[in-house]
Image 1 (tube, rainbow, N blue to C red):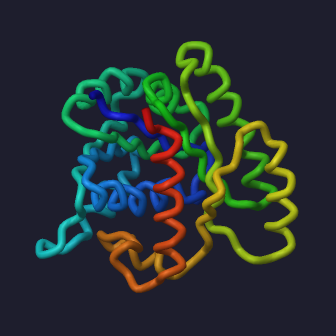
Image 2 (cartoon, helix red, strand yellow):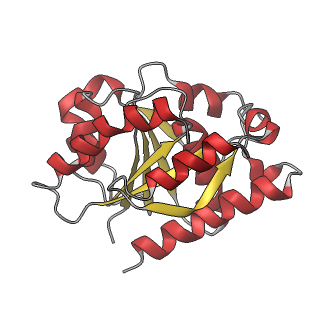
Length: 215
């Protein structure tokens, strides 16, 4: 069976795309799946994250950099679909990115991490338009919002209420702003750190994705 392709995208930087990607992948690996990470960001954050792991405890999945493939990204990604169970694509922070638009053409699921703040809400309108345009060619594409870097304050709660009518459904799992996610960027994931709340967040997100993509 060909790999399921999950594209993690948003036009705004700092919304948690790479954090979601690199913490989520070990949950798939832990459950017996073979996973490939595609780093589509010219800054190579996912690549650097994985390379920060120690030789004794390497990051559990390979990362390939395809940021220079631009509008041919979908063709390059498809070359790997028979070698993995899941391919997770970390996109650059730009709604008009040729790479992101190309990757979405072959995606089964588009995850849009979004911080629940007004500027992030405004910025996310761009990626919603991109996803809607891609649906003309990839009509089976599922898209979901992932609340990331959430804080417990009234502004976050107000934006969350607005996001219910955004046009892309929110997943139930929220990623809160926690020190564990910063610590994990040194080559690991929160699944290997002692923060039960962060572990529960990533495990919950994994379970929702598996349910969405099951045959």
